[in-house]
Image (cartoon, rainbow, N blue to C red; front, side):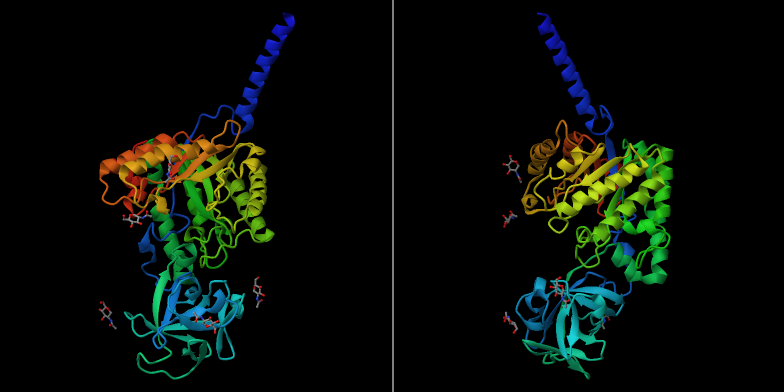
Length: 505
Ligand SMILES: *[C@@H]1O[C@H](CO)[C@@H](O)[C@H](O)[C@H]1NC(C)=O
Ligand SMILES: *[C@@H]1O[C@H](CO)[C@@H](O)[C@H](O)[C@H]1NC(C)=O
Ligand SMILES: *[C@@H]1O[C@H](CO)[C@@H](O)[C@H](O)[C@H]1NC(C)=O
Ligand SMILES: *[C@@H]1O[C@H](CO)[C@@H](O)[C@H](O)[C@H]1NC(C)=O
Ligand SMILES: *[C@@H]1O[C@H](CO)[C@@H](O)[C@H](O)[C@H]1NC(C)=O
């Protein structure tokens, strides 16, 4: 009998102990507070689609870094191509254009460029032959693109030795024509040019405007796109936090490396002042790391290449950015979380490099604060949403960020309004359940939007879609953040959605 009572007491104690352990493993005991946040996207890291007018005044704005060009010879009617994708000669024998036939620009100035090919080599000359063998931009050739006129798609390509490229035969492309005249369709120096990709990120805008003009344009943008009244509006309308994307160059403000421009740190300082004034929490989100963690314009990639994490040096440099930012704001009562890296992309951003970086980045945050949450973003292109659990489980106060969009991907193409809503209540809900475990990390739905591929939806459809997402993402243990606050595309602008009665918090 006595033994039995003892056993019961022991068992009760065990339960209590387990409960205490579980509820304090991550975050604060009995975590109740959840972020209801909005992303200040397109502010301190440029994304052209959020505010296209920013790019309007760039001279030759069609030719920015990362623009993909394809050239069809008017004589062979075939596309210029880096044979094998790079590493050897250029040919002009392809009847359709895709990766190997696309040349990515590196902009030197408004009329001078380098060309980068599919395998990442740069185009250069070997005698008169045009080749793509150099891995180093410095050793490569620069070219002018000479248009027939402003409205024409017909161009010539002139190398820095003064010679024009010509398609001698489908398999021989040389730079050896010094004199050209007229624009006739039997002229082997003429190509019809198509633009296949465009990028409008921070690299493109700062290098596009150049050293003289960019500082003025960026400062104007930073001081007008998000202002104190926005923080007031956010705080008075049911939200409690902002997630602020920043770029790695912010850590060397006021003199960041070329082509970046100083001043974004001052804007972030203001954000903290306003957040404190209106009682909002802040999550700093490193959205752009050196050499780009995903190749997109929103990580300030120069040409679509993703090279972050390939060397220990880039990881170290990124940890220093986290160290700098946490040290600067650790004393602010508004600093609530630091997200170490937004949307690294698999497979180039490897699990191995991220496990190393997340651990080092976590320690950099902990040097300055024992309470700030540290957020690990899941990888784009990975089918394993729990892949950072082993790491996070050992690190108190760690959070996993998942992004749930219903817009990218073929599975959404033909969905009706109701199918989209069902998808949130069924599929997203079970996605979220899968990553929500009683003893695992906290979960943050750091990006979502009430936009879809449905055409012609009415206001009430959008309202139901937004509400479905609030119902489901409201269960995320760390909270959620809408993408974004301001945007010329109205459904992507939470300000517009709130002011027009589409969504309510
Ligand atoms: C360029 O880099 C590739 C891959 O790293 C290497 O195989 C090749 O030898 C390099 N080419 C030159 C010219 O250095
Ligand atoms: C190009 O197009 C614009 C607008 O259509 C027109 O005003 C201009 O004259 C054209 N320029 C040439 C060189 O054809
Ligand atoms: C194009 O030319 C290269 C070089 O001679 C050759 O290896 C390749 O097979 C040719 N491709 C086509 C589609 O003719
Ligand atoms: C969407 O529907 C159209 C028309 O029925 C069809 O041709 C297309 O393949 C569908 N797309 C996808 C991704 O299911
Ligand atoms: C959503 O979940 C249902 C039920 O599990 C499944 O049959 C369906 O294929 C999923 N839809 C998509 C687009 O993944």
